[in-house]
Image (cartoon, rainbow, N blue to C red):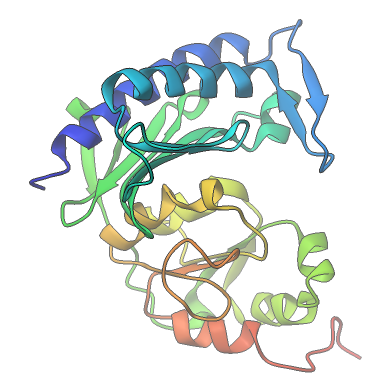
Length: 272
């Protein structure tokens, strides 16, 4: 992991700081929640976490750029460069504000268009996942209690556990029929949603996770964890990486079948 060990260690430091802030605000009776222009919620915890992480990065990595969900992009002090930290201070804010414990801070380091370090910290679940390019993927409460993780060996859709996001978004995307077709042909379906479905693929607990619309901060941290665990991460067009605005994540063995079904034309939403 030469070249990324210090960066991964810093990602854990950032996650520790984020966890301290977010857990103190989780289920707080005075939690302040507002609506962003896209009508999605933002809490005082979202902004506080991102502010703290940006301050640490400005001090420890002043030559790196930063992209965060709440405050946009800050260029590297040395000008536009190949290294950029990508932060989602609280992924699944809707869960967070309702008291559902499935939410996480997502932290990634990208070199150019490639995420080379990824960390997902879900303190309310007592779990963290991380990976660096060429190093493998790990999960645990902290680095001292880490286990290397890998995707499942399931080879047939009929034996696969299929995870998905909100069906309304798939309907708006014009692919509801294709998703329902995947459900019919899978062994089991559950909508875990957000970061969690992707991490379950990386752990081998489920085999497929799909989402139709995503931003870079939603996925950059997930890519290294899934791929270092042996999985495949593409967009709906089959392109690798985090930049496609969608996600088809599998154990790799069922990927072509999933992509083919998701992009098949003319699938009716319901059986006639």
